[in-house]
Image (tube, rainbow, N blue to C red; front, top):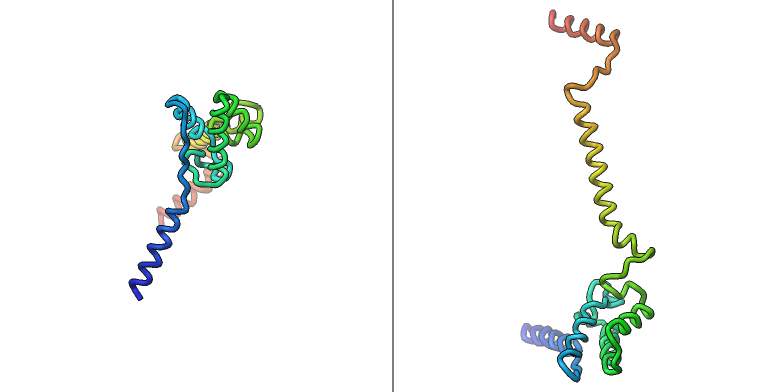
Amino acid sequence: MKSWLTAAVLALGIASVAHAAIDTYEFANDGERERFHQLTKELRCPKCQNQDIADSNAPIAADLRKEIFRMLGEGKDNQQIIDFMVDRYGDFVRYRPPLTGKTALLWFGPAALLLGGLVIIGVIVRRRRGAGPGAPETLSPDERKRLDHLLDKTTND
């Protein structure tokens, strides 16, 4: 029974490895190969979202790699290929989207949140320093007199 279980696990493991596709492309020169690798590293997989299309095994990433290879073969430059992908999938497909009104929050949002947090911490620290031993008394003169009377009463007992 143990050997059948081991064989089944190995068969499933081999089947999953055999299923992974490996792209092989024939490039005219090393410059074209380098451009292909640069473009596939620069563009994000629309399905995976946090993986570039060079490293993604998603079917759409394989289609995008084929499309880039085809466009390189047609003699298109990098900017034309990137523009095609952005027209098709939006600025999301780029790891470094351009600074526009739509993407300003992506570029400046984290810095604004950090700055806001530092300001809040600064305000809290200043307020706590002000409430230290040198803080003004909050008791009225009548309350102070009553407190002194109560304290004298407890020490005399």
